[in-house]
Image 1 (cartoon, helix red, strand yellow):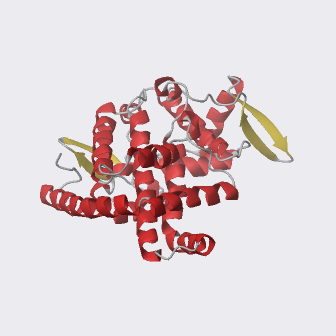
Image 2: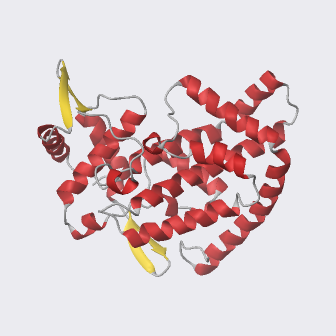
Image 3: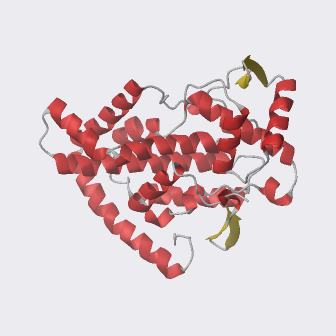
Length: 312
């Protein structure tokens, strides 16, 4: 049995359930950022809870939904040709592990349905979307085909890596723009990047609550809690900062978010965040002061409650 087969017990309000903890070494990067930036939602942000799996109903469609979501994650990252091994590796990162033969079976079923097609390169078989995934359709319909968990976690991982390299990016910015406020820029840059990550998980929970396979009451509660964590860190920031930077960077391209594919794109993203970190120094100083107090209060509430829930 793999590490991902182990489960954690978590409480949200009066609801107790079990979920798979994050074990993948890359995804643990997200975990370290969340513990630093928003410890009150530690473990909660990572919830993956499907009623169909728990009740063993519609599991075939659930597996197809997840497999298509994994291929979507690669597609949004600019990789269109996917192998069975890549799907297998990604599947056990996010969900309860299933056999490679089961994955192969569902990939072939999706091929027979003309959702995917095959290409061979020697002995390697690649699976590719027969048609490009839709853009900007109602999330209710989108989630009936694609599991969005891998795509949102991949986006959160991208920004978590950006968060962890704040010192490097700030030094590059100072060299280019001759700013002299390194410590403040690092603080502001990490704060804005952390806020983007929280919004990514809020967006993810807002889609999961619509999924036909999910435990909707769990995801509804999770979305509420993510909104509280975001409000604690953004309620005195200017709207243009939130709309132009945070909201546009925190959505996946399927719902009109920006693509994060090339190295140049990363440079542009980082420079954008740093410009906002520089231009909104006063606003961020006040917001960070307020949110630091709130974070301490939320952590105390969490400790006092004796579970993973926030007192709202």
